[in-house]
Length: 151
Image 1 (cartoon, helix red, strand yellow):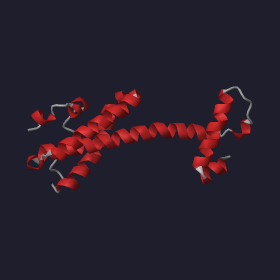
Image 2 (cartoon, one colour; image 1 turned 45 degrees about the horizontal axis):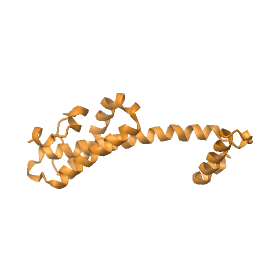
Image 3 (tube, one colour; image 1 turned 180 degrees about the vertical axis):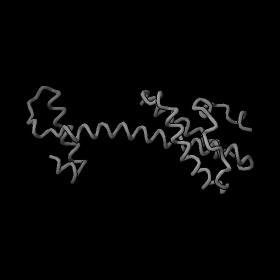
Image 4 (tube, helix red, strand yellow; image 1 turned 90 degrees about the vertical axis):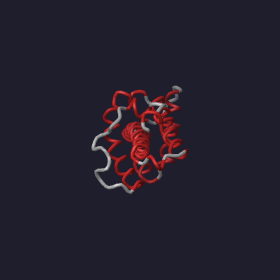
């Protein structure tokens, strides 16, 4: 069964899902066909993927907030809408994964390191032009009145 996992994960996942559904319905299945080890790995992987996606969204949000703060001459509707979009996507991810809320401080710090690289690349401003640590709490970064407090 593990060979199929390595060769064709889509087919493997379809077969494993079918086996689990049959077993959940009370049907007897050949336990040797159930790939418990890789099923557990895939479930853990889903959690990591959600956390990574949240960190990525936070990085984009923070990068655009940095651009908004440090390049006022480039403020426009596109930048504003990107900030709003990322906030919306962050909230959706947290809605689906409320267990990530207690980890937001760590995730924000991790995301800020990526945000610095994004902001430096996209603005052309030199290294050191932005604060070394994130200037916003999660709550601040998500505030809807950013236009007022960042002008």
